[in-house]
Image (cartoon, rainbow, N blue to C red; front, side):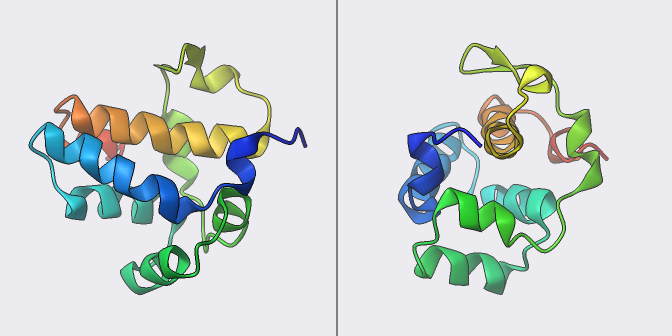
Length: 116
């Protein structure tokens, strides 16, 4: 596994940026949390515990109760890279989350974001 700096960053340090990005576009913290829960299988209480523990990204995704199988339906470009072409498993999970938050901020409906 490549040692990207983000892997050791705490999820809690980036989480407020996800919320800020969503709220700037009229979306809510609750929607951000719903996306994270959908992707990872964490309950709201488990998510809050991970944030409180300052868990790093590698651990956050490693301890995720059940990664959603429909995440493979997430396609598109994030940070100049096609999500579906990312080979590093952990980076792919992080970019899936980035892409979902991006879609939220762009005004997509939740049912489309959650691939329902």
